[in-house]
Image (tube, rainbow, N blue to C red; front, side, top):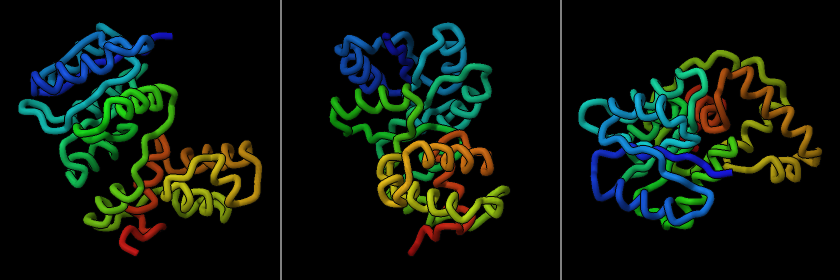
Length: 213
C-alpha cells in the first residue's frame, strides 16, 4: 500500500528536499504541499494523506494551530513535526496538540522515511530525553485521570516515559505483550491521550514522573 504524504513548510528548499527523499521510495507518495499552516487544511481535505510533515514555525498560521485543525477532522492524518531545533517550545506544544512525534531537519533520509512509515502505522515517535527536557521548563498542571491509574498502569506509564516499546515493557515487568497492550490502552483512555506521546507529556506535566530528576 502506498502511503500518501503532504509536506507543510514555508521554505521552498526544504519542501523540495523532502519531496525528493520521500518520492524515491516505492511505498511513499507526496500528494500535496503547503507553504503555510493556513494552506494545509484544504490540501489535506482534497488529498486525504496518511501523514503530514509539519513545520512548526510558519508565518500566517504556525504548525501548532495547523495541527489542532487537522486533528479536528473526522478522519485526521498523522502529523509528524519537522523542526530545526529540538529544544523549541513550539515542538512541545505541537506534541501536546496531538502530533505523533518530531524529527530534526538534519535527520538522515533513511530515518525520515522510517519515521513516516512508523507514524502511519499508528506508532508514536518518541525522543524521551528531548520531551523530558522540554517538560522540565513547564509548570506542573492538573491532569484529569492520572489519579485513576492502577499501580500496574502507573508502572507501564513510567516505562513509556523512557521510550520503551511494548515488547521491552513486557520483558521489564515479566508479563505478556498482550497484557502490556491492554495496560497501555487503559492508560491512554484514562488520560484522554491520543497516543503514547501525549501520555508521556501528561506524566511529566502532572508530576507523576518528575521531568527534572
